[in-house]
Image (cartoon, rainbow, N blue to C red; front, side, top):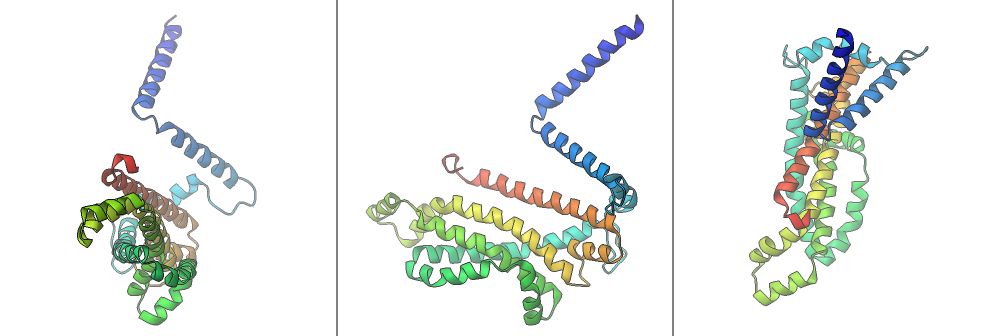
Length: 279
């Protein structure tokens, strides 16, 4: 009787606890279940005969020190994953900020100038299709140093979605807005701040959100082929050269997490700045 009474109580407690969690975090359970299924399938495949990639259990076992001590610094490029990611993020922040300033400025200029748009559009469409890795040898040949070359690769990769989306946003401004500006006799500064920028802002944020993901991808590609610099990309390449596949997988997980955080931060900023009717 005692056991029979305890089982329903425990069951009710577990169900109540899970239901309360689901109410508080309604978006938590679906991705958690999907991740669990993915890890289980991955682990099963790693146990099959002839499998070469380690499973999640082996990855954790072989990289436990890196997970526990991300802040160690032995000098040079021998640093923990926190410092590797921070170095990459610093490069992304510098180049992405510059790409946003130049991209928005050029996009506005091209959007309001039809002749310049027709002249430069073929060139922009040509350059934006060049993969980030293809820019690496050109940047190294021109700049001669790894650090500025990496910054250039991020810049040239991130600028195109910002520039093109800004130009499209400017050209899509409703004619009624321009008519109101003429009726009110707004000067150029007032037109830019009160009409052009607010109307093009959704397009600008679309470009900024795409560009932040491309910038993060570009720095990984650039650092992989640039030796001797602290960064998560070079960490991956160095681990691969030393046949530490588990370290490569751990770094990939961190890269995905950071990329997700960057995208969510940009989405949060977009929701905070854009008016409700433009979201």
